[in-house]
Length: 466
Ligand SMILES: NC(=O)C1=CN([C@@H]2O[C@H](COP(=O)(O)OP(=O)(O)OC[C@H]3O[C@@H](n4cnc5c(N)ncnc54)[C@H](O)[C@@H]3O)[C@@H](O)[C@H]2O)C=CC1
Ligand SMILES: O=C(O)CCC(=O)C(=O)O
Image 1 (cartoon, protein in one colour):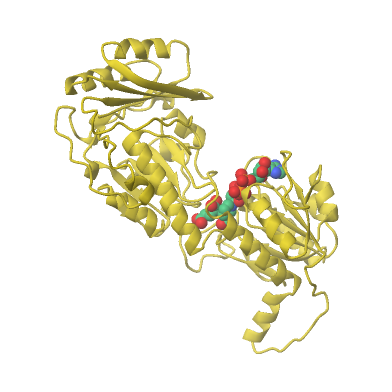
Image 2: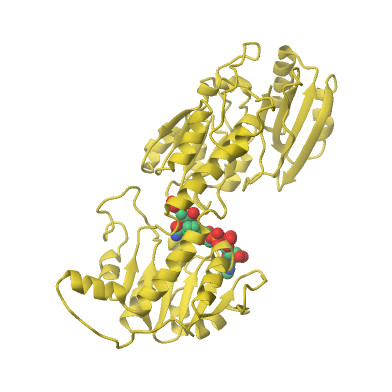
């Protein structure tokens, strides 16, 4: 692996074609014959851009990324290492130094400290919805694109919540546990139908709105609260404040992202405002609910049941880890009645994981091979028609740079001796992304273009694909 410059203040990174251990004058490897997925395979007449030998691209997949994603990346000829778990920080730092691509799910924390060591990293694939585990802004400043799968597991989460509403309303968890211990306890006291009850959805995005439709089909009334004004599905009703929702809902379910604003969004004051005998469901992020406050509200009878899928601290791997060492209140939570505790499985279905593997895998391939950023959560989204096999002496310039005046003039000066067939540029905050297809380029020009662009003070990352 060739070297990459250090990243002073996360700026000025140089990961160009030469970083893949191949000089611009050597012969690129022929494209792999097929892609694993139809939508990629249909572009067979497109020239496969290769600034690198595909086997030189190193990919690390953590947290048991679905086989669909692994197959798709392996079929490209990349080197793919897949691990079932996430890694402790020190090991992660060791491993990330070496790779061009990392694929994670919700547990791996890609903080500034970790990303600072990722000198060769081009792109991060979050094989999930949430991207709170990645320092998106630092990644963008370092020219590292981040992709996720924005809704492939939404339905799975919504279905889990529907199941939990009924399980809580009928105390099924407790009855089942009793039977497992040999106890017959036939009761109807405080067991309810869900028909006619009110579901309060906090966060009416992909999951919340999907859940809204399912809940109405089950005969529930739906109210929701969101920071954005959103169109109601069916006869659902948006309420102006969280407090309004808490006062009216029989079941409160949380579907907001992890942000500073949602930290402990449901704490003692909010439990006070909930109806006595109501229920709480959290399948969003562990930081959203103050768990000691929940324990108190359940012990006092204010809250009649809860389903919790996500926790402030979650173990890196499967095993006997859900104890008081992981979260100080672990034993207290486990000791409550009518509480469903699940190990962050909201999106864990075969359908969702397969779809996520393909969606994120394809986004990674498009980015690595062609520089397309559609679907990126931290860089401007840009696409450009692929070069075709009829265009042999063309190169694609990809330039991630600081969004400052004068860049386009300078870039066009550098490209002036070539024919710029097409060019597109967009910015997102301080970061801008430019793609240009230039014709009539020889291999020595590629080196020159690349070096001149990298030398500019506003350079973050230069890649020239050909
Ligand atoms: N348990 C699991 O396995 C899974 C958990 N998730 C979690 O669920 C979250 C929601 O997922 P989606 O519905 O796909 O996200 P989304 O982005 O489509 O919707 C989130 C909604 O929350 C709203 N929101 C943001 N901050 C808010 C606040 N302070 N108060 C009220 N509303 C606020 C947004 O306006 C948006 O409408 C994800 O961010 C992720 O953390 C997602 C998938 C699986
Ligand atoms: O399945 C996973 O690992 C994470 C699911 C999740 O929380 C998400 O998609 O944001």
